[in-house]
Image (tube, rainbow, N blue to C red):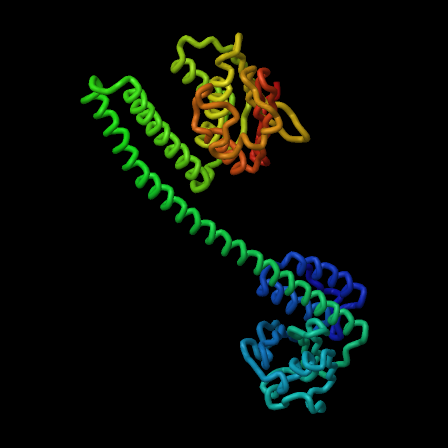
Length: 419
């Protein structure tokens, strides 16, 4: 806070310098985020604006006045409480107006015994907010003094600004409390979800293992005695239980994505994409896929989650372009609307844009399982990863002509090479 020194006299600073200082004080109050900071600013400013020997910050506490803070040449009443009707600060609040008292011992509103141990001979008290006052600001002098009207207006303007600052502090405090409460609720929900997920997983896996195990045992022990139809039916049961196990694993993986905190670091998407393609080529040695990967795609993000996203997107592109005459997959980046968009593009089966929004829901499939295998969780997983990075994802496609999945990573992007 700027100091007023040369312009301060026994009667206070000049009106011009005090007005300039009040502007600075109002700016400081607008940035205050706690009541303690508001009181610190106000008690100091009240003395500087008026040239007073002391200042108090009084809060209304039900039927009492609470002298919450002070700045004075010797102690006053900090920490004390008095009935509203027994002190001049309470009078200012109850009557919603200022009190200018040149000689406290000549004013019947003053409890003289309370003032005798202090230096105070003269005072001015102004309410904080004239409509339904929430406190008051007192200024005191060790000599008799009548405050000029212009100076009184400045002190009241300080009190009015103080009321706004206190309301802002209360608003911010309420918002922060609501955020804390909401965060605690979400954490509790996530914990319950995790318990539920593992409980469901355990409860479902046990009967699945029994169904699969007994079906395989029947095929192994009595397969020769079964008809071809019966063996085929049991084979389908074993296959279905295996697929159910895969769905459970995929669903648990999707649930975990919302629970672990992001560990942000510099991530090379170009290198990640190359690693994913190398793994696919090793798993499919006979496949002939033309691959294009843009260079220098550098972002800030959670590396394991981004690896999961690219693995799903590139895996989908590989799968759905596998029946194309000359499969081609491109992984790249491009500028879009002032940000960078990353994409995985293929020339495979594509999809009907009328159903694009369904792609990112769990267990949503636009192609039959018999045509292309999968759990229906992959794109939902990608969407969850992108959302956790503050980005968005979209899809473009046309049946028989391929698909493009493009995503942003919000403000986490730090650098990129756009081909």
